[in-house]
Image: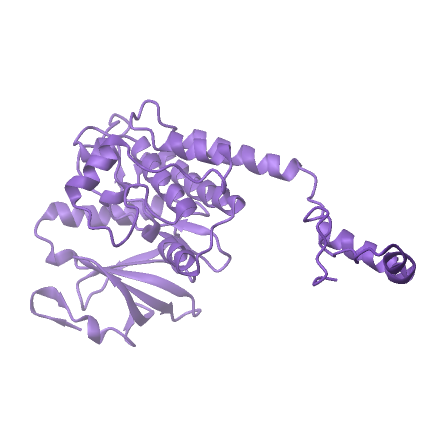
Length: 345
């Protein structure tokens, strides 16, 4: 499964067993890594098995960063963060493997893509829930003094119950208690904060900016700074838009002022005025409490069905409609005002 220099022959992995994991298929790859779907032999549990070509890396610092990723996974324990399971260096391959929780339903990028293809919008309640889950994961990371630094839909996974799981911590960095800013330019341009793009120092609020970009995209089914996947946008133009904070407003007819204002507060250019992750969590929790405290919505269709049934027992069509030359009452009478629809009865 390996040839000279530690090079990995990926095509030979499928169907093979590595340290108690049977490789099922390749699901992704990067410059120094491959991600496989695998099955743990002891109990049949499906996992994502990440192979990192640690000994192909140019210098010791890169190898140290990979081992840091393992340590990051080990320190995190949150229902909305991909769960770390195990790590090992295979003796035969001399490569690092990390086994993490398998997300059965793919990632948020695919969910957004499906919504675009089907031309459907996410309901506001679902958007608040998604933001709350991601924000809760970030709050846990920030409490551990860990920044994600590459938050985007493709790095947010979905389990069988539909819960979001923040993953891919390869670009995360644990800041020491004396360090409040990081200065390296890393991440994905569409979701990078202005301060990162400008080479300035940045802190935890840079992750909040990325979350704001994701929240906007869930609402509008497109990035705030790239309005069409087919748009021929140069990196320079993209950087200009981001550093100027130029993006169309979220549709007011679809979503509440509270949701739009919160996303706007996450996308403020000045980090000082931008929401922190605790404020985002608090607003989401307040929204959910208010939603639970509201009385259940009245189902006008069920009420009308009941009325129609009682009117039928009184033979109202014969005694009232014909005598008074009135149309039958529609089953959606209360939902659509006084307009009757003979086609629905």
